[in-house]
Length: 290
Ligand code: A3P
Image 1: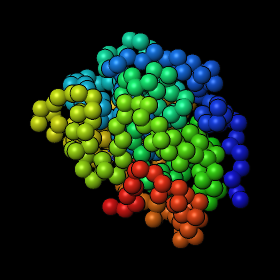
Image 2 (image 1 turned 90 degrees about the horizontal axis):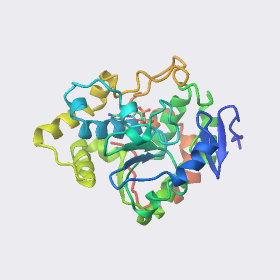
Image 3 (image 1 turned 180 degrees about the vertical axis):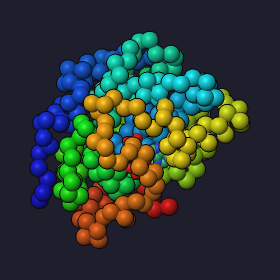
Image 4 (image 1 turned 135 degrees about the vertical axis):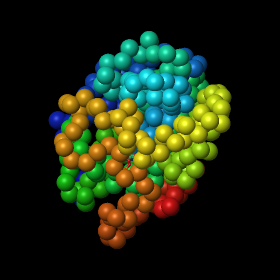
């Protein structure tokens, strides 16, 4: 098939998982011993599953100044990347509760986290939409290898030869080891169907009480349309060496079922042949269309 090794110019492999070269194996290895506080929250995803959306929701829930527009701080700075600390956040000086965002597979996360210390919010998305979103993303982010041919990109994705490795391994790993973590599972599609319920689930999980008006404000500001207008929330100010090849944008379409506009019947059959039996074994039931 067409899947070849990803270019070393863009990724390295650490213990079976591909990382972008803007982190190092040493930093990733050090995370095993990263000390977790009980109040820490980790937004955990496979790429293109609603990471930034969830980041924005947490930022709105936890920071009054973001909700009210009185503090102009970017979500990227409030909620830093764990393995890609691109803005050099000082993890120790973050206000409590600290929130981190990560694409780590379960087995590379801090040891404390795997012993049910802190909280994990794991967001997953139907993998056909993930694939299509990922394909467009790779045209747009400087640190990702651009593969203009969708067929080749799909084969790479199916073979797990992309940043964060195989979608199925990521999701099934987290599902199968859920009992080791203090974890809330959400899907992109349920957030899309009923954002308010998803926000309430998150508040409940992290023990944050918001008034009815505050909830309304979070929900309103976390819609796709409003996030597109909010530069704090939409990664508009990504460091120049990371973004942007000048094509596309981070908040691209934000819909469920866009894969139907991209994948041919043959590609869809190939995808199903490789993944559908495996997907059926997962406890998460995905929605393919809304
Ligand atoms: P599309 O490329 O399908 O538009 P991640 O943050 O994990 O990289 O995921 C990015 C995907 O989430 C993109 O999908 C992006 O548009 C979508 N997204 C971001 N904010 C969203 C929102 N408020 N509502 C719906 N989708 C959103």
